[in-house]
Length: 178
Image 1 (cartoon, one colour):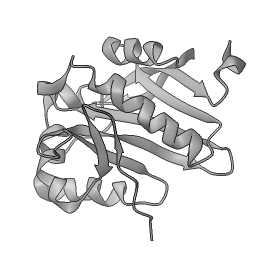
Image 2 (spheres, rainbow, N blue to C red; image 1 turned 180 degrees about the vertical axis):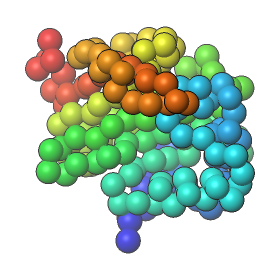
Image 3 (cartoon, helix red, strand yellow; image 1 turned 120 degrees about the vertical axis):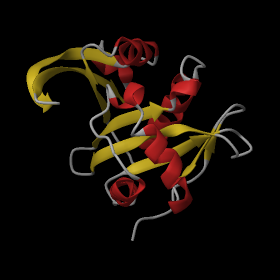
């Protein structure tokens, strides 16, 4: 059984556990062409999206719903996946509904997620894999002190074509990356 995640917050956002009633919002996000353009999965029905809700509940995933402070507006979701206790690392991921792009929500949510990973999960390394043409995400990673480590050329197939991914990482002691 997975433990319940703590609620994380700033003055503008809260990160709370993803619950079954988030299904429709998650479907809206993971079926929106602008969101899934740079995201690894998509869904074409509410029923299919239940698979994602189940994935969020797996013990190696630490994902939150990103909402307004009053919990009335769902902005998106973010968290850490592929948690490896043995290697003290995880991969960060985040997506927002297009109505909330450009408002600094990603730059506010990602430090909360990283702090949780370093402090509570005792991670040493948080990785981000970004499609090479996702310029907005790459800018956000740089602003949050993730270091570009390289590019994996033609490492995945998406929509029947090979894509390349830029690798970003942040270490618990960031000075080790310089």
